[in-house]
Amino acid sequence: MRKGILEMCILGMASEQEIYPSDIINKLKESSLIVVEGTLYPILSRLKKAGLVEYKWKESKSGPPRKYYTTRPAGTDFLTQLNSSWSKLANAVEQTTPNS
Image (cartoon, rainbow, N blue to C red; front, top):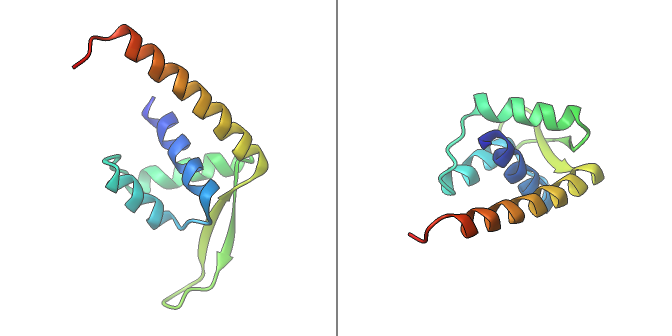
């Protein structure tokens, strides 16, 4: 379940702008979804293989070129489906659990 949520979050970030993996990690940490590079890169690789994201190499002011990720049209469509499923799941959980 967590893997799917992380994929949804990563696609969401990449749909807003080109994003560098360390920025993805920082945003996930800020949201209390602690992720390390060993978790992130396999997810990015799966998303790329599935045709949901792509990357561009950009020159860096300090060091070698960097990969910046963005969603592809299929990734945007998949993200829309994930958001819909998430809304339905969250609604179902709210309706079936007592309020805290």
